[in-house]
Image 1 (cartoon, one colour):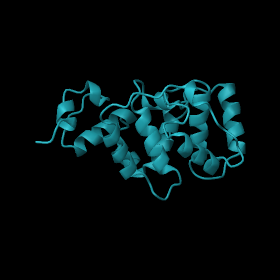
Image 2: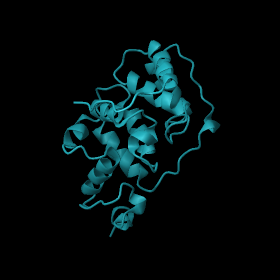
Image 3: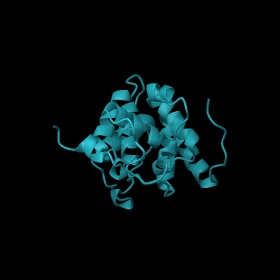
Image 4: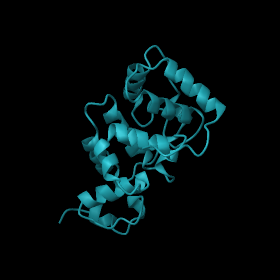
Length: 191
């Protein structure tokens, strides 16, 4: 069950989302992607213009979810985030949890992994209007992870904790591996 909204999105965000949804293909991720694109357009979050997908993959995503819409943001309008050493492991983890039956779930794995490199709450780094939409994104694209978060842990902390547990580190006190005392255990050379 989704948490109630604690605030209302701005009129500009609502108008942009409505415009995007007027072009939606009717696939499950359309609304979430409209939120992501609206957030980026309004300067929310830390994702680059292509949401971390690369130009061609982003264009294919937009064409699949919003046919007939021309959306080509300039790549220089948002910097590419620094990808920390755990990025590939986090991406592999999320890709392995993505629901193959949901169109775009593999793209969501890359988008979420990229946003995890940010310093804020995951919903903020994604440019979503609230944590509620992030919970929708996870429930739709990563249903096993959504079901496993039984204590409603903050999503970024939960994802890192799950990643650490799979690597055999059972105490992840940090939401980012860069700040974790066990960083060398997860990402050091194999012995």
